[in-house]
Image (cartoon, rainbow, N blue to C red; front, side, top):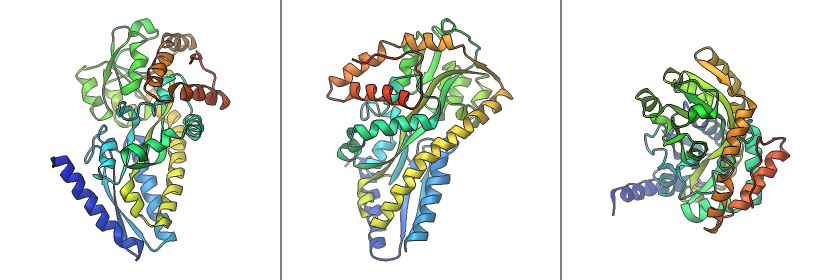
Amino acid sequence: MKPLRIVAALAAAGAALALLAPASSAETIRLRIASGHPPAVVYAGQMRDYFQTELKKRVEAKTKHKIEWVEGYGGSIVKVAETLGGVRDGIVDIGGFCFCFEPANLPMHAFQVMLPFGPNDPIDSLRVAQDVYAKVPYLTKVFEEKFNQKLLARITDSAYNLGTNFEWKSLTELKGRKVAGAGLNLNWLKYAGVTPVQSSLPEAYTSMQTRVYDGWIMFPSAWVNLKLHEVGPFYTLIGFGTITWHGLTINMNTWKRLPKEVQAIMLETAKDFEEQVGKVNRARYQKDIETLRGLIKVNAIDDKVRADWARALREWPPAYAKELDGKGLPASQILKLTLDAAEKHGHKWPYRYEIK
């Protein structure tokens, strides 16, 4: 047996022992929760400060059981690209992660990224995702059917803009520059003539400092909390949109061993957590922008530049949808639903992508 599988087997065995007693007596349920991102990233911070706190409080107020948390944030147990597998194998019970780091396993779950310049408001983005998930059962079922885990919540980010170590005003000034992103949003750069570099937030500061790349497609909270403004003194409000492409999942073996009343409370808490992250991101967005204005130069880009950039990407969404359709995935259906749902919630696309 490989070392990782040994760890997973031992972890699963430990979880089984920890969860057997609570079903029949007042015992403590010990849950390991982790993310590759640190709590300074909004969703990870809300996992710790809201989901964990609320679940413990509600379970202990409404049942005879108690919750004990073992935390592993900032990659201390699983890295950003290991969380899906870590939850699957029982290394952790509950994991929060970005679908962007699982392009092979979850190719459709970053669907809003495939339509950049969508809604900027996190709650609008969440509503779009909720609408699409409700009409495409595959998006939820695949976690249980292929990855031994249950999707508890969809998690939205704040709106994405572009932080750089140089000032720019037009798309031509970005040509050939190295800019970081994660997963599919690298295509926002590639199709616009910008040189894309795959990266992750834990390594962003050092990579910007050492000029591995010159900028990041990033939401303002990270530019503030991770002090990226120190190495990227220009933040441009391009308005790529808010993406709902993180998730909170629980290992199915752990889930099945939980008392029914705890399961119900966890689902209720996860639903509230889904809304809470959106509300926090909405409230903090303008605050973070104002903080950045006091630290570095913040520019609002012209609407024409935004439309030009969106138009430059027009060939990618339909081509990528067709590629995924060919693999048996409901890509075109999902993208069409996303375009319609965004408009239903009041969004006007700077360029409306055409999906066959």
